[in-house]
Length: 323
Image (tube, rainbow, N blue to C red):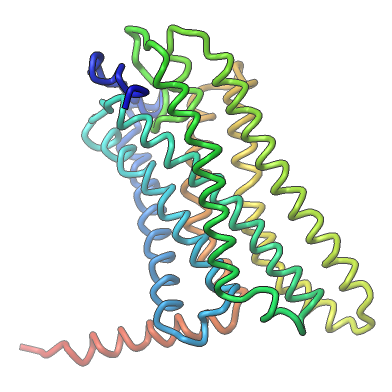
């Protein structure tokens, strides 16, 4: 508790400004913002519901997909509701404890998201390179352990960020030019030396994401090597098509995240609203598009979702009685 002593003696809140320069357009921006969030939330909830109800879908690939969905629900929910409060009601204040808590969940969720993508790459590697041993290598219990390891890693790497910041004194100017408590945006409000915070955040981001991207690259190099050994062209296409959804998900996750990291530290000449909008895209579009991408590319999942959708529609029609 001593770590957070300053929050008791200094109750002044931070002020999240939203998107600087576009304050008059906040209400209009909130329309697609809220729409994308709700569609993404609904898509991921449907995915979780269908996998939970269907015994045949309780396989490693779908369990990893559920982990991805839960992570995306958690990270987007850590960001979007507060941003909408700013856009709609101009409720810009956030306590120091609340700000540090939000920061922890946002960044821990991002690392967990990356860990799940690594596990999914390993899943595709085993499915293509060792299909006969798939069930013995990747059991549901082992997938759960991989998820737990990813969660522990995320907590251990991100927990120092709010703890380090909590020891700093904050200046009278507590305005954060953002829609959420991003680590460096909060750190820049400190009157102390934030060199350690800056270096730790940068090293953590590049070390963890660099390591994850290396594992993913190795997995796909081995996959491509295995596919090239197959003589049948049709088998080539079938093997590579199983990786299409995962590749799309990675392209929606890593480039925006890395772009945001670079932009905040080295893009001083770029307009603030461009950086903030790009940072929010990272939390809006993957939850929105990932269920769609996997639904389109996975016939089994698509059929199960369609079955429950039709069942709900017919049930609703049967319950409707004209007056």
